[in-house]
Image 1 (cartoon, rainbow, N blue to C red):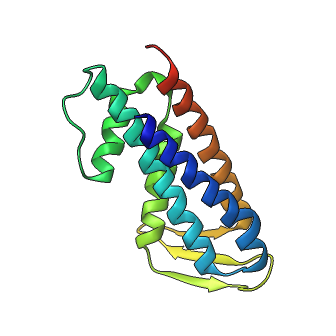
Image 2 (image 1 turned 90 degrees about the horizontal axis):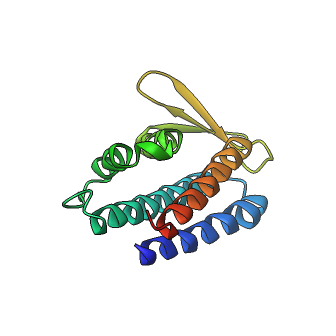
Length: 151
């Protein structure tokens, strides 16, 4: 569980670099998508860490291989942590990465990825990605506290 947490911290460093350096100089939708992919990877490591703790405490018997099954298991196992907003963000990002998209204002400050989701169209830009990055940091801190607690 500590190893997965450390992997998540390494991923968030990469997201940090992508957000504050790469996106600053390369304002493209591909950079937005790369950043989203790294955030998804961070979430994967954080959920794995939570599930490994639950398995060590004998709350669950096994950890599923499928990412969305892991997400559901984390939600059901850690109901007391109120992590639904984080898992909702994780699911949304997974949908965004699979959805068809178009680009607007590439190479400018307001570069936007317009994704066609099943029920609506969503626009992702640097500002909305910053909010998601901040939520990912919050989730990282929550998981770190949970992993290090004796409960």
